[in-house]
Length: 476
Image (cartoon, rainbow, N blue to C red):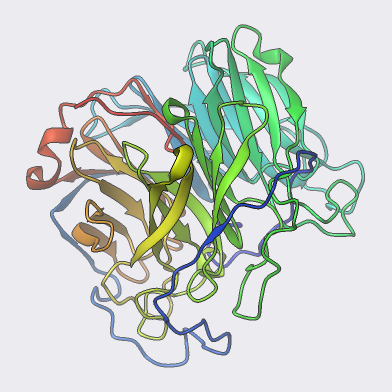
């Protein structure tokens, strides 16, 4: 999401050099109608399945909420996990929660460091924050500055969390268009950490973010000396310029990537890049190679994020139609707009891999025309032999769905706060060691328990860490 629900989409992100031959495109051919940009989600009254002011659920129990407080009262964003701690991003900084009592997490650290979105990841002793708002400098006391100002700063901030209760800011790395999101992947020898920095929306008026913007920035962070972090490459993922865009609505043109998910075990990464979905070979961490591209000019307007299944034979891409500010869970938008697109990864001759479209998944409930609702961030539920995912849908709430049969996904459980309970809804919902945790844009950090009929086999899977954009296999 580019800002809070209904917030203006901000600016910018990265530049590059690595040329590639364009791979073949996978395109859905189900013949669904294209998005009509004249459609207004507020054009008619909608009777919501969950009435305004009420909260309903099925096979999910809401256990607790930790309200936003102190200096961090802005938009809640992403979450990462390590050991007994959850690290929750906020446009004003980040909060550390102790999950020793998972049903009622305790806030133990609050770090004030404004710089939206503050997309957050952790790996061993390193925490990384993304800054995608132009700032006066790289400090945690910075103020807003116009992106048209050459002196403005955007990029990533690297923290030492050897002691999670005393995070130490050790280094910043400015990237030419800032960092809307980032994804981590360790080096083959595990001595270094690579940060794939994603960003978009260049402008001729931005001195540090000129079009075309077909690149990502790759930052190398030595784990023993994170203060030595630096850019090592800026690969060009779209030497042909990517999708040129159309008149279907918001942000269809490829001008950078919104998000990338890495999967080191398989040397793969999936990129959601506005007008294109891509699959990459990352066996050379500093020179990722695009090996397949998917494009959906019927139903996908803004490729936002990606999640592999556990054995890397499928990818769930999300379409954040409207940038997180539209009410797409209404009759006007139907079941395929603002939804997930599920793709199989097909193995072809000589080991070649290609993305093959299978189906869409969208929550089946109708929201009011005043509730921003669209596919957003989620993670796998670690049940071996099944492909289960828990996911945020802004004011559409939380959905658990099964995509084991990638042609026929189905919802298993859900939680929904009706209109007026949360201004913005849930940004991220992730499954970690037996519970689902969610960061709400407006009202704070939520804990959920999913019915045992769904996740009983997952409750015994203990993870040492979880970065949903840096996938690792689960064991049982």
